[in-house]
Length: 434
Image 1 (tube, rainbow, N blue to C red):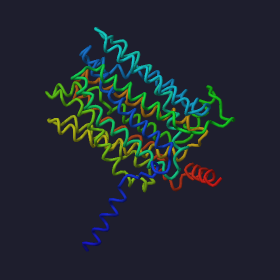
Image 2: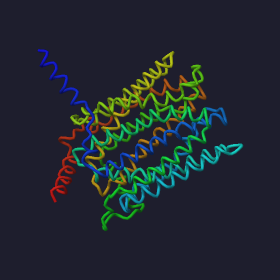
Image 3: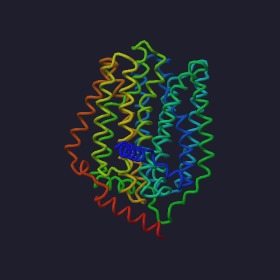
Image 4: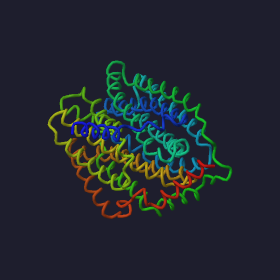
């Protein structure tokens, strides 16, 4: 019996261990992964520094929330157009040009922070410009991954990307708080500039093939074609709608500076930002089991409900450690939801539509947090920080359950029997054989 229990324990550990095969097998994925590690580290420094600086300049919860609102329109417009150009132009060049532009926007934030009187309007304008450039870039990055990773390794590659994102999210916020306290927010922006320069060097080495000569030109018609395809796939629409609902109602990072002050622990600000990432990191490190799951739609639904409930419980906690614990649970649930959503996208969408659909995906997983922070700021302005946090979590869980009932095709999605997954798997196998 002890030997049988030991074998079972070893099998469980092997099943849960993170799958590193995409890193071993693909040089270009290794370069993209390394670039992402560096970029995410710097990006999270700015993610903490901007709301902190806005709070220092205005002292207003609403003003902090409106930073996200200012980013919304550029993100929507450029996200859709970024998807169209990703299917029409060289994806590698798009990524390089936009990475350089993002580096310049952070440099502008650094210059503004160094002024004797930093300007509030600069945070809004640069935030909008940065959102535009990031939205132009993201569809090309997303569309590139199925080209550099084998079809059967896409779930593992998604989990690895989540791991590197969360690693940056854990280290950078706490470090950002220290840098801002010791040297000011300008120093945090300066570190981000350096990370962008390193990332550019890594991206330059990627050898991704250009688009075919008969690629669909970027146009309004091509955008409409992509939207029409998405609307014709209830399983895809489910991934978008559930994620938007979850983020709009329960994403509340704009509240963290105020929650830290109310709890008498301003030094906990960085920990609040890191807590979700700690949960996500734990979930990604033990994500090997996700490769054995086939009911991805149901997995997204369950994870989104857990996310909302955990956020609501965090609002009820009387201690900092209680809040951190439930934010970590929420982060783990969000990471699992993201892995299953990305698996559906990467395993079922044809390459010639991948950029445009990646633009739509970007709207679902970035517009939600932006609107969520705006919603959180408004609700906190009306009812207080904890009311905004708790009510948002409850509304999230309720909305996801309602959508699960309204979207049976999404709820029943199974990668083993879905026609789109079977067709794309066969296409990838034919290409590999050729």
